[in-house]
Length: 294
Ligand code: SF4
Image (cartoon, rainbow, N blue to C red; front, side):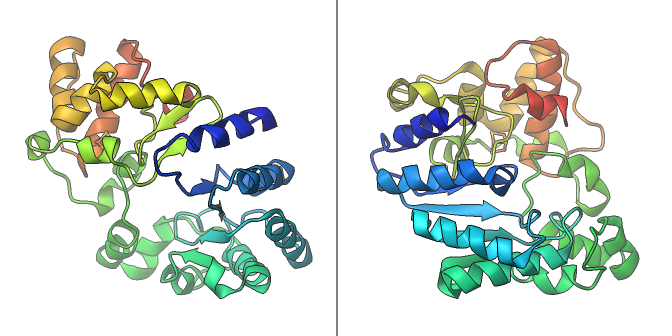
């Protein structure tokens, strides 16, 4: 994200009736540290509450980590959230997670540092702490039932990404009709947490690959939503949820429901959207990279 776009997006969030707290995230925001520092300075100037989310993947040298946290603290950062889970530990050696935690606490103190989720710290360190651990090792070590408890239930997984496919052996599956009475009004219209990306996409909640609009035009977007004017796929999801999306895709775009069912409503949604992105042209199915790299 260019610095100018970062300023624009931070100015845009001040347009919300109640200015939200901003979390700088990625990917991994520490991979472009000067931009992160600039973002924290800009958010401080604008009076926006602010914290950073990091996986700690970058944290190799403890003194450099302390230096970076000090620079962020001086720039006005209010808190640090460090990701800690078997999913992060697939590619991030736990030693880096613990190093990040130590450095962050040294600078910010424990009350301004959140480990998300702390209960995983012990379990990820049962494996080699200098390497990533494939998720299959949890099944080998704990057996299928316990791995299911740790991986599927323990993290509050949202099935709107790869998890419904990659972890299908760990999750119960439900037929499409299970989701007939579920809409997404709360998830989309009243999300307590949203994502604004470098391409202009405004992603409500955790609905990856589903843009409700372009944050560059936030005042118009807010007006449209207040008046109940939604893009076509958003309207269906708000009113009838992913089951409505599935019905539309079946009748108009030859979508075939998965015969062995879905692990959750977002799995149904993302499966339908992966089909729609191939056969139709909906502006809401953004960013394209979400689907191209699935
Ligand atoms: S079903 Fe789709 S729209 Fe609804 S919360 Fe899940 S990803 Fe978002």
